[in-house]
Length: 143
Image (cartoon, rainbow, N blue to C red; front, side):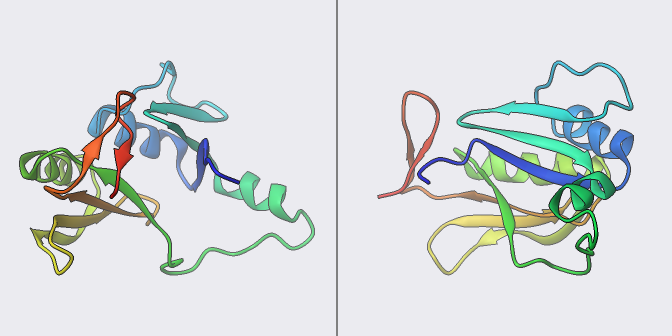
């Protein structure tokens, strides 16, 4: 496997999560309704999907669906092109109802980053490094 095309988040309240990502963070989707059965957001190189948590758990194992509890050890990443963009995304997340887990700051690996969690508790790192560049498709290049 060399490419992840869709990341699916199981959500407890589709309307709340849709508003958080679409209206709060400005992620692009063609969905206009408030209670769709699934939502796809268009991002460079990947799609972010929202799907009801109960249905996703059934899809994984209908007889014994996995249970959600606490930090899963996985974070999603938003790779910014400037320190200002990091601050802007963190501020948008907070205004949209997200929780700031770590305010943006200079970090040990030489970059600048912060963390927020969305209404369903998924953690996002918003990060920038002066050493990063992006290709013609706006995909992050890490050297």
